[in-house]
Length: 232
Image (cartoon, rainbow, N blue to C red):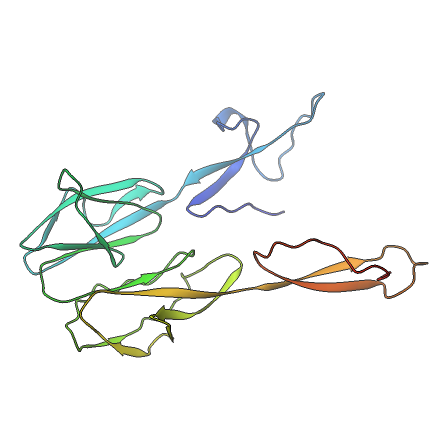
């Protein structure tokens, strides 16, 4: 049987109510007593737990969150960072302080938080609709060589294959390099949509033509499932 999937959540069963109370959760393969009307079963989801790990350099300090602290998917992580001219990043993406002087982000995967007062720049990896991008916590000076991290098995996007990391129109593969400029760099994942085949069976042995016809469609493409007149 097919188990449904939802990014950031674990499937916990089928419920007769949207609220998904524990008294009426049915696991796949369980039996359900049918009544006198149609039934809708709602997927019950449990948020996954993700870890926040902390990195500091220079004289920066992070308070308000513990190293390796766990948070449920979708939770807002809030903390403070101190140090002269401190810069703060979550998985390589720069964060700005709010009006209360705190930093925050909504967690959707394991997240490495970096606070630094060290001069230099960082490289961030943007999954661009996917998840599981690598993290680089190094600080680079202008003119330094940067080795691009391989995608790794954690980087995924449903319906797509990974094609490389894009920076200013140039596509980089893992373990290739570029020279650091005068600002932070964001490498954006480039994805190629997967093509799928739909097979149309004529389902009538007396009809003319082949017994089936294949058509190819690209993931995410808005199509009309039809065949040219006279195919069968």
